[in-house]
Amino acid sequence: MVFRNRWAALGLIGLVLVACQNNLLFQPVAPTDVEETLKAVKLRGIWVIGGQNTPYNLGYPTAAGVIAQVDLYDPETNTWYPDITRLPLPVTFAGAASYGGKIYVSGGWDSRGVVRNELQIFDVIQNRWSFGAIMPEPRAYHDLILLDEYFYASAGVNTNHDATFNPRYQYFRYDPSRNSWAPRLAFGNINSTITLAGGIIRAMGGRSTSTAIQNYHDGYIATPTSSTDATTTGTTEISIARMFGGAVSLLGSDLAGYILYFGGINANLGGTWRAFVFHDLTSNNSILTNTIFYLKAPYEAPSNWTAAPASLNQALAFHRAITYKSGVYVMGGSKNLPGPIATEENWFFNLSNFPAALPPPVAKSPMPVARYGHQLVRVVE
Image (cartoon, rainbow, N blue to C red):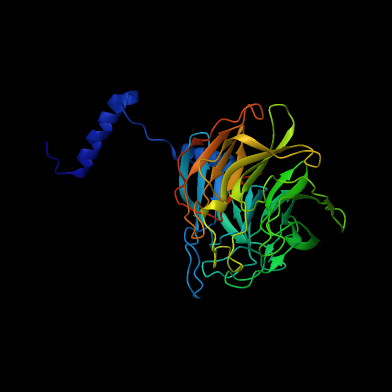
C-alpha cells in the first residue's frame, strides 16, 4: 500500500493505535516520569567531578587532559549518566562538597597548570552553574569538607603546577549563607587524606616537607561560633607512611565508629619536588600499595590501625572513596608511577558485616572517563 497523502497515512496509524489500545508493545514514557527519575538519581547518586587523565608537562604552556565533564553514577541500578553537566572552569585536584542541594568546587589547577581561586557552584535541581566568593588565596591539592553548615578548605599548595613545592597549611572556612571566606588555623600536612569522623576533621598522613611522608594523623575541631579552633594530638600511627589514598568514616555493624584508609603511596617518591607531584620523579610502582587499614573510635592512642582482610584489586593512588548505604565505592586513580596511568575502574566494598567481615571488592560499571585528581560528591539537601 502506497499513501499519496501523508495525512492519510498518519490517520491510519492513529486508527491502529486506538484499536490496539493497551495492547501496544511499546508505550513511551512521559517526559515528567523521565525528569522525576533523573531528579531522584541526582539526589541519591555519586557525582564525579574534575580530575585529569594525562600528566602535565614542564614545557609551558602545555595543556593537560583536565576533564570538564561531570558524570553521575546511580548505585541503585549500577548506571552511569555521563557528561550530565560540565564545569565552567575545568580543574583538577580541586576541593568539592555539597550542601543545600548544591555542589561547591573550590580552586584546583586548570588545563594550563595555573592554580585557581574560584568557587564554582552547581545547583543540582536547577541544573545551573554560578560562581561564589573568590578564595582568600589560590589553592590546589586540597579538600573541601562540610561541617555544621560551613565548608573548610584544607591544607594544599598555592602555586602553579611547575613551580617549586610551596605548602600552605592554613585552613579557610566558607559560609554559604553569607558567601564569604574566613581564615582559620593552620593544620595537618600537605597531601593528607581527609575525612570527617565524630564531628572532627581528620587529616591522615601527607607530607611535612617536600620529601618527608608522615605516618600520623591529626584531628581538627572546628568552632564556627568562635574566632579560634582547636587541634587534637595525633599520636596514633598508620602502620606505614601514607599519602594520596582514599578514606571514609562509617558506623560498623557493632555500631562503633571506624575510619577506613584505602591504598596510597607509602614511601618517598624521590626526584625533584615541584608543586605537581609527578614532575621529575625517580621512584616506581613499588611505592604504591593496595592495603586497606581501619581504625576504631575514638581514633586516638591507644587505638591501633589494623590491616583489613580485603584489599584493593591493585595498588592505587590519587583515587577517591565514598560511602553509600552499607558500602564504600572506590573510583578512579592512577595505577602507575612515576608516569601516571589513569583508571576508570569502579569498585564496591560491602561493609554490612564490617568489622566482622570485609569481602573482596566487586567490580561495578566503570567510569565513563578514566581520571585521577577528581572528587566524589553526594548531594546534601
